Amino acid sequence: MRSQIAKFIKRFLKDPYRKEDKEWIYNLAYENYINVVDKLRKLGKLI
Image (cartoon, rainbow, N blue to C red):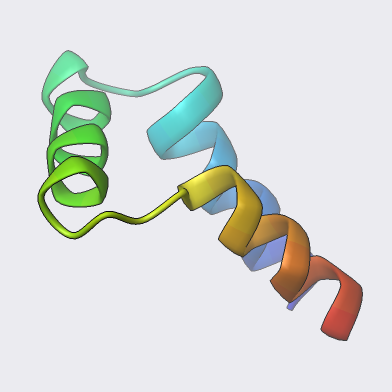
């Protein structure tokens, strides 16, 4: 499970494969009032 979270972080937040990936996640988070980093940190603590 942790490896999947790491892949998600790398793909959408740190080193996106495509610029569109990073834009998509930031737009999704903005439109839905989501703090992606905080959510991933909480998820990491649970697993």
